[in-house]
Amino acid sequence: MLELKKIITVKKLFLLLGFFLLYFLLVLKPHVMVYAGSWQMEAGLAEEIVSQYGLALLPEEFEQLKGQKPLYEAGKTDIFIEQNPEYAALQVHSLKELMNLMGGRVLSLEEENRLWFQLYKGVSSEVVTADMERLILFDIWDYYIESYEQAVRGESQYENLTPQALKRVEERNKKEVYSPLPGNVTTYNFELLRYFAVFMMVSTTFFVMPYMVSENRSRMPALQYSFRKGRYYYQNRMAAVVITVLCIAAVECALYLYCAGIDRVFAFWNCALSGFASGFISWLPWTLGSYTVCVLLLMVLASVGLSLIVFVITNSLSSHVSAIAWQIPVAVFSCVYGGLVCFKAGEIDKPMLIAPAVGIGVFAVGILLALVQGRREKGKDAS
Image 1 (tube, rainbow, N blue to C red):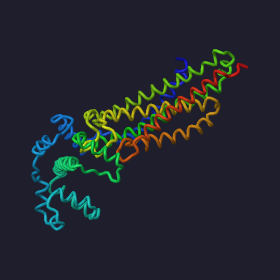
Image 2 (image 1 turned 90 degrees about the vertical axis):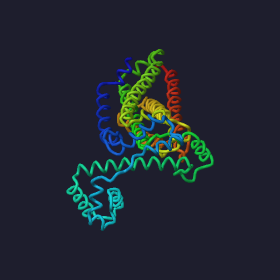
Image 3 (image 1 turned 30 degrees about the horizontal axis):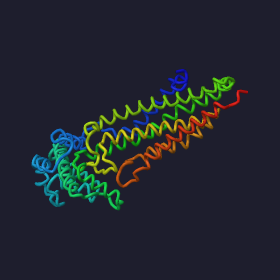
Image 4 (image 1 turned 90 degrees about the horizontal axis):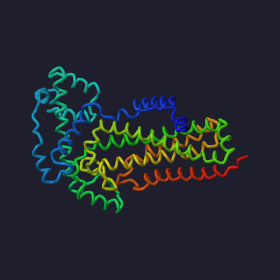
């Protein structure tokens, strides 16, 4: 307990909280969907499909769903565009055609602004916004229907897959393809996992380095090594480091789960990850929930391993400058592993074992180094 109090200090907790708030505002917030719009509309449609048809949209149910697609009726904005000669001169007869023209970037900014201002003047901005939202919903319906039809035909966006990967795609096409999991939920969940992995590994090692340096700068280790029992104190410090890392990781996992809840991940927690709308095919038959838990577990293992490596390295350092220098490669590894290797680690066009091998390997190296160092500490000369 005494060692935990040395590691988890109020000052460090406030520093970590401040760093997290800054990190959230600059990095995480864009990936937490708290606003309305097309993102929420797509997730809302998918959630309705899940509530009505369950976790798999089978072919006969898909035909029923197609019959539920609402019919598009021209709104006030479409009627105004159809009757306006300036839009007709551009071969634009509806709001959808206008949006496609704008998206093609064939008009100058001045021309685009003039067309928008003319719409707002002739119809009103409120009506245009409402018609645009209605149009987005119809586009989402079209996207879901098109994605389903392509997926069940066996079409895939992946190219140059290995024979093993192709075999896995065939297995996915038998069952998991029917999952209605929306692509925006998977994409933003992957982004959250990616950035939380970096934050977790950096923040957990942050607690270890100053603790060990402070211990080494005091006279306590020398006094402990004057007695045989004191040389076993290393185990207490190592246990305190592991408990600290697990506590910090647990809090950060809870923060991630809170953000994931806002992104509606739990609404599709049991849906197969490799669904027709997810835009993602995994190496294993994961659900969104099982994949998320696996990545979180790798994050925790890597954090424990890295922290133990830092614990061993800083065990003999009494300078904060030297310790910080050793922390630089740890931070670089955290960014590379959490930000790149773990990002969509289980996707079919990526090596299957690299992410788990590295995460488990770092954990194993940290445990091994700590145990070897522990044996050395026990054998130190009492003099």
